[in-house]
Structures are given as structure tokens and as C-alpha cells.
Length: 59
Image (cartoon, rainbow, N blue to C red; front, side, top):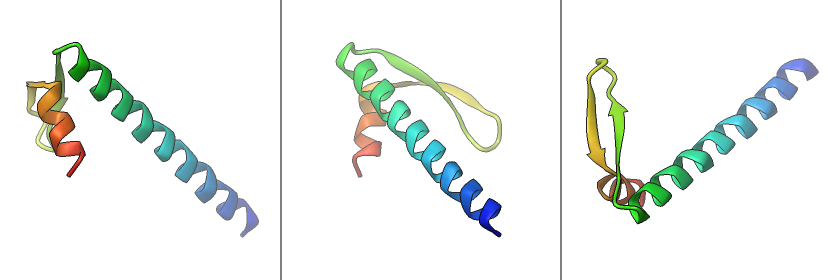
């Protein structure tokens, strides 16, 4: 049981770190007026301006 708690805590920390890294990537790309390639749940990919992603992220 203690092992599961440890895994849950580690998973939470990893997700928090990934979210922070993605936010930094979007912010730096938006500052440079760049676009990012994103995919949806259906496997479709498209190029989206980082400024547009940043607006969605802040909502």
C-alpha cells in the first residue's frame, strides 16, 4: 500500500513538471511569434500559433 502511495506522489510530481514545461514552451514560442504543432485525440495534427494556445491555456 505504501508503494502505491509513493507511485501516486511520483506520478503527480511528473505531471506537474510536464505541465510546467509545456507552459514554458508555449510562453517562449508566443514571445517569438512562433507556431507549435499539436495533435488531437483522433490523431490529426495541425500548426497553431503559440499566442492562440497561450490564450486557451490562461482560460
